Image (cartoon, rainbow, N blue to C red; front, side, top):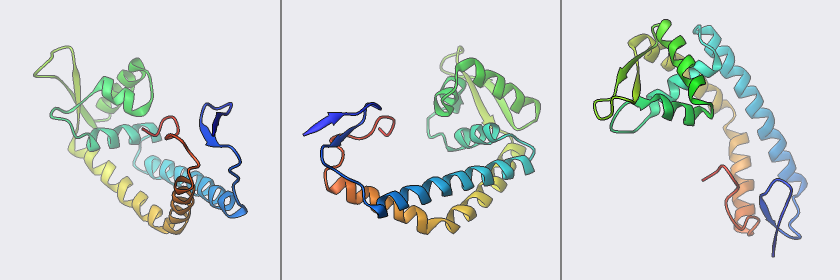
Amino acid sequence: MARDDEAGAERTVGMRLSDEDYRALGEFRHAMRVFLAFNAEGARAQGVTSQQHQALLAIRSHQGEEALAIGELADSLLIKNHSAIGLVSRLVERGLVTRMESGRDRRRVLVNLTPAGAEALEIISIRNLGQLSRTSEILGGILETTRKLAASGAWSQQPAGCE
């Protein structure tokens, strides 16, 4: 039997987390904070903000038929469209991305990395992947905990935002 908690997620009544589960969550939370600080430092070393780095990564990782549109960038970064427009403008000024009209819909503005943007992103990404490899044991622990809880029926549906 499931009930709604205050956050809107569902859990199985009577399900309790173990000390090991809480330890895994705490280690993961700490590893995320360390990684985010490490990521921000790496972005600064390349002369970009953390948000600008996230934008470069979203642009580079986009899999669509056309380049990423500014509206899609806003969705990817969970920001408003006007904020994405300003972010792209700053990246264009720095020579890290270019803007162009969509060939399919002239109302859509697409963004592409420049060679300088691609280089900055690669430097940051290689450094970040190295940091992630150093936390792989912690990541493995939280994955083991979530798999155990999922197998026990801890969630009747996937938590919000994880679709």
